Image 1: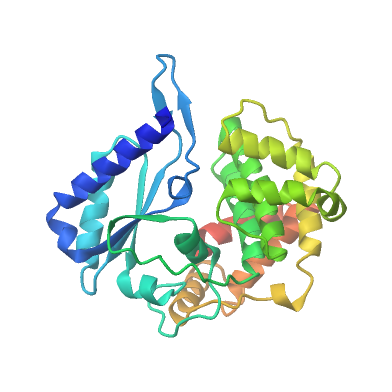
Image 2: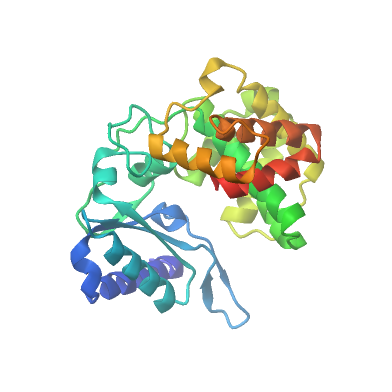
Length: 320
């Protein structure tokens, strides 16, 4: 067992111990480790004293029983305050996990899932309580490919032009956009897997088609982004200019009816977006503002149009 595995194992045991000792545990049905640690893809580095440092945040889902959301919130805040690592807990209802609902307050069991819910069942692990993610048979909505790319554009643009992030942060989010384009390719071609390592392998095994669809330099640039973000490489010098071309090329794959609108939604979520749009953005149709924002983030990024900044602000205030 390597030092990374020992660190991760000790960390998980510490989380379990804190939950076992918490008075709020009676309201929790299950605790699920998600994100990179749930996929066994956590990233680390060693400091100048050769101490191992976790770079990934710790994403865990606190699955609360009916009527126990407040207990889950208290436990969430306690875990954030207790651990020195970047703890990122989320609260999610037991009924949502059992019924595979994509959003809170849904009623009917959906035919398709979001990538988040797909990853919950296929790229996560239960570390405490009842194992609710045994059934891996979840079919994702292909529109999620478009949403993944648009979300990364929104995040990158907002950080770069509105928050005025430093160069290291901008480079990191440019690399994340590259990985998102690879993820979108996998979703479109029914080859998506929650683990980035498997996506990486898919991209390389499809190299001939990738060069035709996304461009001759994509695999080399994607590999740099993967090594930089997932494997701790110090080298990343992909030209920002090429990102616009890759987004343009993946966007050509979205020109079918399958990518015009999502197959997954909920009344409560749509209502939330509608209300936010009416309050904050008078120029958008509040009934389809999410689709408009996603489409325009991609369009204006490709065109190198400054309107992408405006839509990243809409994305942050309405969708995020």
